[in-house]
Every structure is written in structure tokens, then in C-alpha cells.
Length: 159
Picture 1 (cartoon, rainbow, N blue to C red):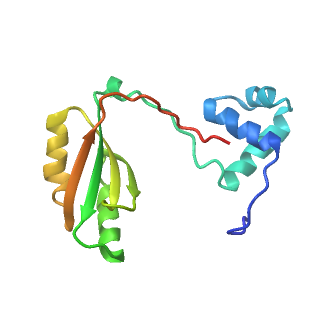
Picture 2 (cartoon, helix red, strand yellow):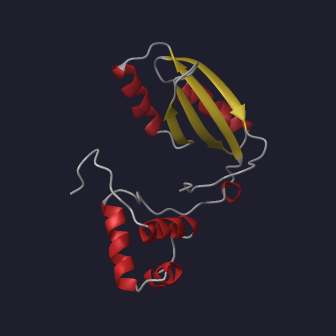
């Protein structure tokens, strides 16, 4: 069991495994072992340990949103009328249930939350704002920034 707040030491092989999986999580254990110059058994054990320790949270497929008619990308800043544990918890519980919101961050500054929202088009986004976001109690202000093009999109960490 991992002890909280105690840093776990990773060696260069562990880091190579993580870097390789960031590029392609579909690799077989043998392919991953070849990539890091080890045999499959120790690579399998290291990968399972990295998962158990929380370095690998999950494996996902990156989907092309345009292929599913979700090409409008909007960053939506939300300011609550008042902020405390109760209102923050209520807001985040509601946001978790809204499928158009793909990411949500609690932020500092002029706004309390930054939402990443996917929609088919402007009409669907407007409907989202009016019927879903606008119905959440305690929302004070909303500012939307529409993405014209995605210049860089990297799902990995630099380490």
C-alpha cells in the first residue's frame, strides 16, 4: 500500500515505460518490453506496479470529435455568485452530470471554474448554456471563448 505524501522513486526504466505508454497505450507487453530493452515479465510487473501506485490512472482512446459531429470546442469560464464548500460541491456535482462538459477545473482569478465544452454547433452550445449551465443555482457569470483551431494538443506529460 502506498503511503500518502511519501515520494515514490522511479528509475529510468519506469520512466521509459511511462513515456512509451503515453505515445501508444495499445502496445502489447512484448512490444513494450522491446521498446525499453527488457523481457516481458519484468515489464509486466513494473507496469502493474505503476498502475497500483497511481502513476497510470487509466488507458483511453483519443477520439476525433469531428467524426462524431462534436467539432465546436468552447472554453467556458464560470463565476459563482458566492463561493463556499456547499456551493462549490453543488456546482461540481451538477457539472459531473453534463455530458457536454468534458473537463472542469476549479481556478483562481476572476472566475471560479473553467469548463471545456464540446458541442455540435453554436445552436447546441446556446442550448447548453440556457438549459443546463444556466439552470445551475448560484451561477453568477459566464464567459465563453470559442476555439477557432487547435494548434497543439498533447495528452502526455513532459518528464
